[in-house]
Image (cartoon, rainbow, N blue to C red; front, side, top):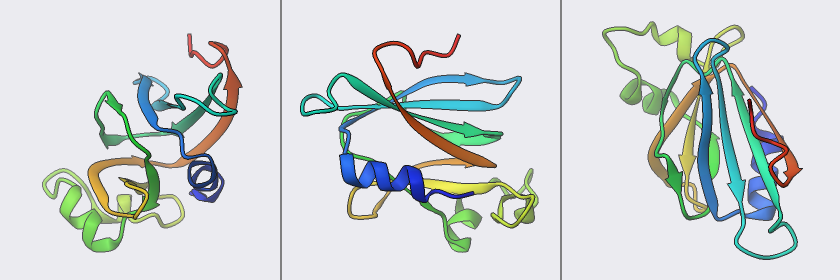
Length: 132
């Protein structure tokens, strides 16, 4: 999983609000929306889509800046349920899921995570980003 493009936007633009928009259990797509309460991107939403999101722990909303980073092996071992998960499945290796931590701007883990195969992000205007 290449987190760099999404992480760069979050670092440079620093949107203050994260909202979980949808999770489609059939396609396993998790959609997050990042917005700002002012500035040049106030009327835009940064939509982040995690594909094949098989496991996640998130609040419905967060009202401060959020960053993403890949979990270390020790963090993955602590987060993944040992009785139902093969550790290799969440190792981030080719063909495995990557565990992504939500952190504050200083890199401190917030206690939330997403395990998925891939991630993408795009700026959209108005309500054009809403998944049907």
